Amino acid sequence: MSAERRVIEQFDETTADLPRDLALGLDAHFERLVRCYQDRIYVFCLRYTGSPEDAEEIAQDAFVSAYRALCAYPTDRIRALALRPWLYQIALNGCRNRARGKHVRLVQMEGDEDGHSEIEPEADERERPDVVLERYEGTRELGVLVATLPERYRESIILRHIDGMGYVEAARVLGEPVGTVKSNVHRGVQMLREAMGRTANEGSIQG
Amino acid sequence: MSEGYQATIAGTQRVLDGLHRLGNVQAPSALLPGVLARVGLRDAYWQQDSPIGPVYVAYGEAGISAVRQTSTPAEFEEWYRDRFGRPAAQVARPPRPLADVVERRLGSDVQGEIEIDLRGVSTFQRAVLQKTMEIPRGEVRPYGWIAREIGKPGAVRAVGTALNHNPVPLLIPCHRVVQTNGRVGEYAFGSAAKRAVLEAEGTSPDLLEDLAKRGVRYLGDTEDHTFCLPTCAGMHRRLTEPRFVTFRTPQQAVSAGYRACDVCRPALAS
Image (tube, rainbow over all chains, first blue to last red):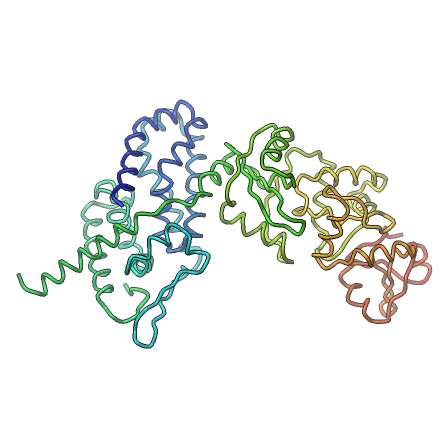
């Protein structure tokens, strides 16, 4: 796992020149932008919506919107762009719109009579790398809990603890004061801890 | 430190570790090619099951651009570059909404919205293809019907040529257009394939051939006195009941006191 994290960090190092390159030639360098950020943006959308299908669509739409915006921006603006928070903002809007446009599909946890929840991914999901990872005990349950947190806690938690973003950048993405984000993260972790501690088979958190 | 406090610390650590693990996910492989295709930087194609076996389906900025059956991906790529002047890269599967739409189109009556790239075709061909999309699953129309419906009744042969150059067979159902004498006729993938696709859609090619051989081009309903093309949905239902008559020409139907069906519009109003 730490190896994967390192890979992500390495990508970040190569992104330093990306705004300049995009300003020089958008079409020549846009693929690099998608390669650099697709995992992070997809994870954000996946954990926000709790649905791989929705996450794929929203992430794809986000990059398409980013491309169209970059086409319209003057080169000075592209060169000065903080790409990562900017892309997260686009993805965040997509996630929020999706959540408002239709009812979020809640993945209900089914418990058997003894109160053990047994959550098996659909047969065709088993081979997906994201699902395979969720075989770690409790990880899938935690994913469901995150996706059903009230929006303000969910957004802050995903940025800070799933994507590993600093508070200043997370505050920038969310357009909120750093203090607000910190307290939302704190409260969100508390809610998750309490929910994980409960033995009852609840699939969502009421906020 | 109290036990309760320590339990809280441990619980928090468990949540934070769990959240960290939730971050270890890779984007699906279809994401990047999906984005590049949609912004027009690189078209993509995948192998798709269909009623005539595996076909290659390509898409780009303006939607689905091609459906083609070739023996190898390399052959498809060469053909694609020749025809469209740009390359296409193979992907394992199409991006999410597209996959579902194509699947539905090829395998069921449900016909969701689909974007098809018709930028490379002439105005005439586009009119032909758009009209062809209106033919319901389970029904067929003659070339002459298309020609008349698009306001070019004399252009029957050109309709055939336009359909033969359909960039997206199966998705635009050119297999539902048959010869004016009612026979199944030719197809880009061969006439055996045409019969197979029609059969898969619930249209009997044998019945079509049989009617054509007998010179029957229209069926009349003896109760409401309308006449239809043989596969018109309304008439299809009635074929099981002994309440239809056959006609060779619209004139024959009209002089027998029948009027043309509003749904399949078998002939010009006269």
